[in-house]
Length: 322
Image (cartoon, rainbow, N blue to C red; front, side, top):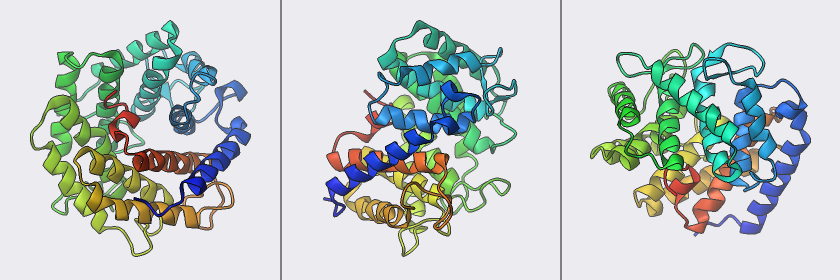
């Protein structure tokens, strides 16, 4: 049982969505060229707010900026495919099209799938020059899982085989601390570990039946929880990494029946995020101006916490089950 009042949570969710809606010129393709990383953060909020049907055109606009190779660029109207952007846009389209049912979106998804499958490296990873191999690979394993669940293709062997190779690459990278660290991109390991647990280890459990995936998840979750500061934050009051840690622990604790242990840790983190936010929105650190991407992350964290408090399966909210 949480001590965060449900009515306060609902009010914050309403206020933050109103704020993001007022900033539509900074994320909607209907308004012009956009940063697709920001847009995919907003599409996730639309999904979790159950606004997909009313805002279907925000998903459909992605069709127009897909690159000839089947991917998407970080900047919407350029032809410089990013693997990380491609997978996260594609998985949002997978989820959105369960409601929208647009054949043109489905064609986009299939083109993206074929592109991603075609560029896996020999050692199992996927590459993106702006992201670590760890983050990029886990974005792919997440996309594959959501594609299979939303399309009822859990037995498609070529996807399962590619995801397992990605899992092996990630498993072999883990550091002795229990966290995954990349000295070039995220040396502290908080964000990377949170991403890998959510996007690779849990899918390995749900989709591939890898018997030791649960232990890897729980060992990493324990290490992650141990890095929480007394304030409730992670990584020197980093809003983004605190949001990632909270969301990750929600999924893991629910999936593996560890709610009793991790709920106080999660609630402490969420309360810090609520206490340290701006009047509207979040910046990257306390006291910094709000920005759309971080506010979308913050709203998603609140929406996931609301779901967590309801007792409904968190895996449905990641589209790892339905």
